Image 1: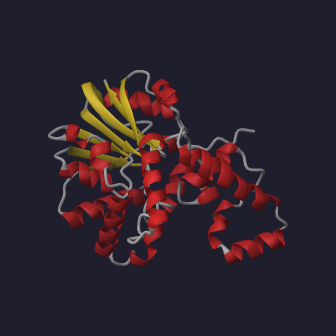
Image 2: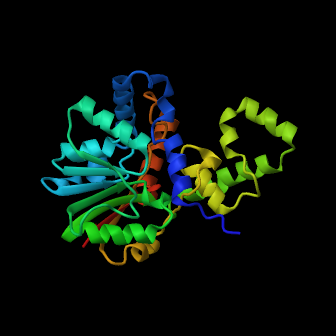
Image 3: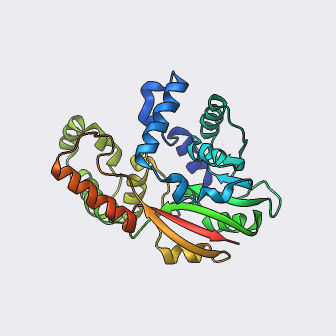
Length: 293
């Protein structure tokens, strides 16, 4: 039996769980307040976005954002001088992104499109950007080929995908989350209900079968838990194989800081934050890939 998810199930999932939407549900009725709080949190969680994506390469360049989601990175690309076209697979993502640009008084060309079949002529762009998208797409080989096709010679791409060699993957996923999901699966139903009643967030971690590695990755990487149909993690060698048509110019990693929204930390917490910061710079969860055609 082939249970590999297709584009339709991926699209359905991201229409339901657009990045950054669920966490701020209490602000949905106030678009400006939602936008300002989303931006505030993003700057705390990922303060080096422009540097890590090398956005300076997009200045005065025809740029494509593949999978713009709610549009924070698209916003930053435009602020760095990009002549931006942004696509997303979901209507909800484009709704949030276009609302962001309208409120901010920014301009870009937004399109509903599938990265596996980009609706652009060959060599249309000088810079490609994609943040946390490619690892959710069923046919990544098609995406890589399409990226190569639409990129101009000597053009650049900055891509972020999930890092298999990250401490987060091995500790948070393979140890902690695997243990939690296995215990929830083995628990008698009545006990599981009581546990979830006390810890409602665990409802997203209850597997329908013995948890496989793919199930753990899907449940842990994004917002809907076990509802997430498809996520992947990569080593650098796997990235090089995926983008074999390109020149791989380098890598970087980062990750979310420890207790990012806690303004006052005691000595122990400051020490933990320092250790995690060092780990993130070398073994972070976010793997940035720099490509050239």
